[in-house]
Length: 279
Length: 253
Image (cartoon, rainbow over all chains, first blue to last red; front, side, top):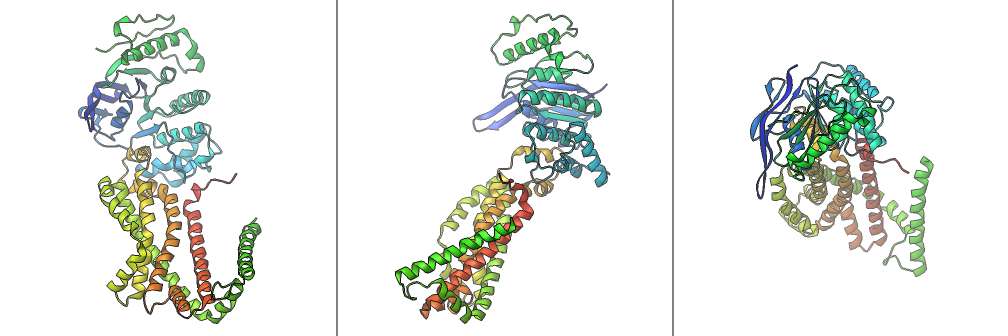
């Protein structure tokens, strides 16, 4: 498998009134095709900047972002995005909201084919029967599901998720985690998830990248062992506890609240993969 | 349901007219102090052809002025909504322009284009009514959440596509809110000009001639006719709003 997303030595600073504010510093992340990477880190460490760079909405000061062997210089239609705010268009029905990207991205689909594609996705996330409803008639979790459908309706190579479950209650969030797995089983996208939720990161991702405090660089990478289709029970195993412990410590280091050397990783039984630390 | 929708406002108008009649009757006011609703009927009948002709003139001038205000207000709002530089540059000018009492502008325009009564009236209606539209559109566009733009921009959509698919529809509720204010403002503009300009026509001129000949029932009849036209135009805007921005209306209850 080749790397679909390749972030090489990206450095970026925002111009502010009080001089440049560096947010990313020599960041390197690569995501293999079809895999799922979660990015966690302290608040304000430049995670959202990272999504905008991958989407081509911004260009880094230094370094390069490559998608599928081409360098990203401007937005491209092979990217799908979902945010914490579902940003559905209130004047459109749920079905028409999901279809929106197909109206922008060049394609040969007929109107009926577009509708069928959107209907299939809505059914997959459990929104069958809500096609003609307006966004305001749906609950927050349902709106977020529709937003996910819109992000992947045009079969993007890359799905960028910027804390899409952050504003949901705990039960709805767990529902959506499982829906995310169901979508992955059907749709061949490569995904980058920005999150604050460590349990979410190890439940959804194949690899978790911990960013350091600002300016952020990849401080630590944790590979989540592939144990087949995950269930919520997997979050309550000793292996999961070990991974969460490791990640929590790394976040504390990133926040500058714990020295990097003080940590002895809890050796959890059944944890096969060794965390690899980058220099 | 529809019966109630018609009956309730009609009943409210009747109660208002009765109260008015009673007020004049109780105080025993003569006609030259305050006309009562029962005097209006004869005034309308006596001048029915003038009411039709002048009412039409006032209406079309107001509507044309309003249409100009919509086009200009939209364009100005777009320029100010999309460009921070233009917003900073134009805002004080616009606020200052709006702060000038329009009654003072009337003689200036009347002297500037002497005899061009139609154009002057339309111009006045336009000048008084474009401001709310421009401001609401510019605010609607400039407060568009960046995520809305990013959803389409990340797919490589052009600025025009983003405007048509997202910015414009999202601004429509604000636009119609402003248009409702502008409708009544435009009537004020039209009438200011019609009243002030000599040899004018339209309901404003009719009002003025009622004043000159001390025909109080005629003056009050003109006010009622203006209110009627205002109601008609206002509800046309409400109807358009329901068609184009009905989604923004929350179901009652």
